[in-house]
Image (cartoon, rainbow over all chains, first blue to last red; front, top):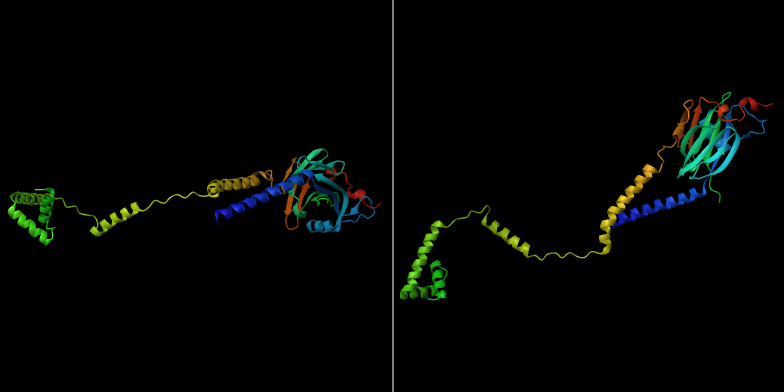
Length: 155
Length: 168
């Protein structure tokens, strides 16, 4: 490879890098749409409780593949705009909340707080439909799950 | 006797004169006593030098020795290549190539070292020792699970426990 061609390739690569950085910075400044869904997983159908509704089929299929439970009920759903400047708080319940911060690219830092005390901190990529589930066991062989995912930007 | 005649006498002695000229010199020697004396002196001098002349032995063959000298003379006689003035872009290239390379390395290292804030994907830190976490990351399923244990749902969430959502 001649020096001229090498320089041209290198310049193009740097250009792409700078363009990408600028694009990400622009997205970061306006914020990224993130959704958190509190889900209750069980084997027993709860058809009479109005506060519970069945989780969307696509997500249910995904969860069924990963966990032992067959039924997944949506308890609460929150959508927020997350930026890299400061963490965005998402109240999941009266005692539980998430703090999400955008670290750059598709990386997010998720803090879980329970009863006012920090519980855990996780860094995860939510690129290309990748979801993150923070979960724990509940009574009578059930479980609670918080599904966190990135939503496409509004046009 | 002039200098020219002296030189001819020397040439005569060395056998370097053409035949006709040599004959003329021989006649001249027979008539001129001074010339005959000079010739005798030259003969004596040559005789004396013959015994004391240093013979130099060449380390290689005579032909090769002289061919080396010839090549050296030819080399020195060749015209020196004139340094052409190169265009500005070529001179700039000398600076640009290392600078661009260093910049590319710096960008790569910057992204690698500082781009991820020092935390690996899916890595979970717990704030309390009373809790444990199992993290499972699946690229194929597009899903990461952080399963917290040793603290029940009731401590983290006030969502309905199974008993409370039983059909009434």
